[in-house]
Image (cartoon, rainbow, N blue to C red):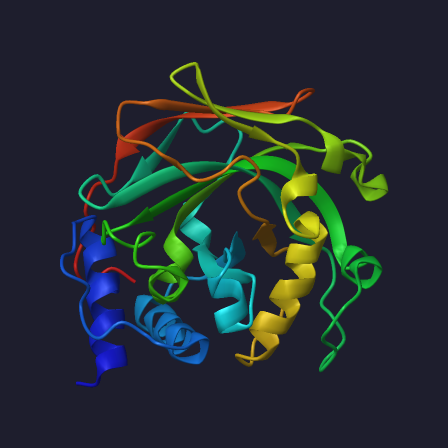
Length: 266
């Protein structure tokens, strides 16, 4: 079994069992191409439908070294939830965090072969923007500490998406200046606006078009884009509560430990 297959199979198996995984199950990827190849192999092994993609930031100086300032990972359909959901699961023996995010819904696919979209062209693909919470969780506790290539190799560290209310007047982009505050058990853990997120949530869509095209994929209508942590990546554990306050809108959830699935689950 090759290194890519070994890593992909180990992560899929650990996620199915919601079990911790240590050490990293192979030789860590050294390039973006290798990291995404592991991710694509894991997507194929996992077999679930993809309802969205998470986008995260690659910080300096690695952004220059890798030639990218963002990364992406799949959000599986059975891990996308509406605002009425009271609890979101994490892998208790691995890494777990919650992030206040904007959830952007794609209304139409980009033209085949078209990449390098302007923000205006990327916005034209969108048919809704909602507030939300991304759950970042992995069987491997060192996923964030080991850097973006390791993060990419395990589905970009995504474990779920909670979609809240639609942002009113989103097409005018006024929400970019909304103050956003994240709280864990009523204690403020981060605050910022979407203006601090590189070129913002719509820029995340433009990035994702290019990222997927390089892998022979495209953004399909109805796909959600979780566009990056507004206030930061806030580590969390089962039993705690996370709330994201977007000023005029809020979304919150309790955090619980995920239960294992059957080993033959698709």
